[in-house]
Amino acid sequence: MKSFYIETFGCQMNVHDSEKVIGTLLAQGYEQVETPEAADLVFYNTCSIRDKAEQKVFHRLQQFKKESGNGKTFAVLGCVAQQEGERIFERAPHVSLVCGSASYNKLPELLVQLETGNRRATGLSLDTDETFETPLTRRDNPNRAYITIIEGCDKSCAYCVVPFTRGPERSRTADSVLREAGELAAAGYSEIQLLGQNVNSYRDPSPAGFDFATLLRKLGDVPGLRRVRFTTSHPRDFGKDIVDAISENPALCNHVHLPVQSGSTHVLSRMQRSYTRDEYMRRIEWMKASPRQIAITTDIIVGFPGETDEDFQQTLDLLDQVEYDSVFSFKYSRRPNTPALRYDDHLPEEEKGRRLAILQERQRQIQIRRNAAYVGRTEEVLVEGFNKATGQWIGRTSQHKTLNFIRPNGSDESLTGRYLDVLVTRSGPNSLVGEAVQ
Ligand code: SAM
Ligand code: SF4
Image (cartoon, rainbow, N blue to C red; front, side, top):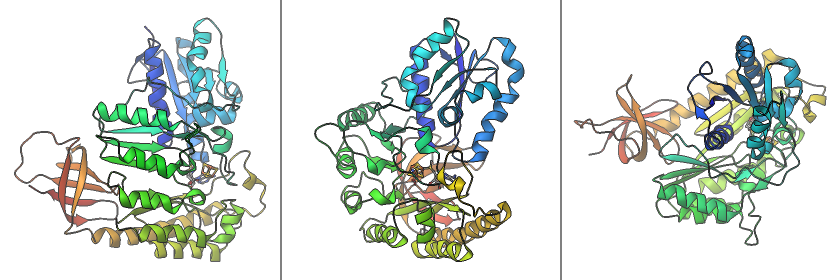
C-alpha cells in the first residue's frame, strides 16, 4: 500500500478540495500519513491569490528537494499548479505531478500514469463544464461540513488570478447539492457551509433552474440541519431575496460575507468590480433592515494602483458607515496575467503598508465597540472544542462570532458538537467570553 501526505494552503475552497482529493486517494488504496517524511507521495494543494502565498509553496518544495532521490513523488495541486503549469518542473525538477482544480476528476488517471513509469503527469486543462463530483469525500470536522455548490469564476476583477486558475463558473445541480446535504444531515452533521468563489451567482443547470435564494430556502428546510452558512457572496449578484430568505428561516445563519474591496467608486471601477459604492450600500441597508441581526463581514484591498489619499479616506468612511463585524484586509499584490499589472500608477510597498495599518486599527476600534454591545446577551453556540490552555470551551454563534465559555460547576462530559445557550460576560475585538446557561 502506498502512503500520501497532503498540506493545504489558502481558502476554504482549497481545504474542501483537499477533503475530496483525500477521499479519492483513499478509494484508490492509498493510506494517509501525518508527515511528509513518512509518505511515498507528497501533495501540496496551493494558493496563488497573493505573492506571499505562492512563495510559500516553492519554499516548501525547496525544503524537501534533497528527498527527491529517496523514492518520494511530489505533486503540486491547486492554483499555483494551474498558474505556473509545466514551469514548475523547471523550478522544482523533483515534482512529478502538476494538476489544477479544474482537472481533479482526472487525478486517478494521472496517478496511474506515474505508477506505470511515466516520469511526469499534468492535468492543466481549463476547458471544462464539469464540477469535481465525488462521493469519496473525507471530512475531518464531525459537525460542520463544506459543500461546493459552484466552481470557477466568470468575473474579471482586475487584480485577481482566480479566473485564470479555477476555470469558468459552473454550478452543480440543485438535486446533487440537496442529496449531499440530506446525506450529511443523516450522518449527524448539523451545520453545512456552502462554498464557491461567488456562491450567489449560483444557477441550477437542470431544468428547474433554481437561483441561489431558492436553493438556500430548500437547504434551510432539510431535516436535521440547524445551521446553513455560505461564502463568498459577490455584491453584484446579491439580491434582496437572499436577505428575505435569511429573515424568514432561522436555519440560515445570520452572517453574510460581502467583499467590498474599496469604498471608492473610482477604485471599484478600475478594479472592474461592476458595482458602485452606493449600490453596495443599498445591499447593506437591506441587511440592516432585517428583523434578524445579520453580521456583515468583508474583504478590503488597500493600495490598489491609483488609489489616492481621498480614495483611501472613502474606504475608512465606509468602515464607519457599515460597522463590519470583521474585515479581512490585504495589501494589493501584483499577480501574473491580471489586467491591473498594466496600470502605470502602482503604489510603493511602504505606502500600502501604512494604509493597511491605519485601516486595521480603525476596524479594531469598531469591533471593540460592536462586541461590547453583546455583553449581557444570551447567544446560542455550536461547541467546536475545548481549549486546554485557557480552560474554556470554544463556541461559535450563528453570526459566526467566537464565544469562548466556561461551564459553571459542570461535569467533565464533552460538549463538542452540542448547541448551548451562553451568557456573554466579556468582549474583546475578536471574540466574546461567557458562561454556559444552566
Ligand atoms: N470571489 C470573492 C469576491 O469576489 O469577493 C473573493 C475571492 S478571493 C479568493 C479572496 C480575497 O482575496 C478577495 O476578496 C480580495 O480581497 C483578495 N485578493 C484577491 N486578489 C488579490 C490581490 N491581487 N491582492 C490582494 N488581495 C487580493
Ligand atoms: Fe477574483 Fe473577482 Fe472572481 Fe472574486 S469575483 S474570485 S475577486 S475575479
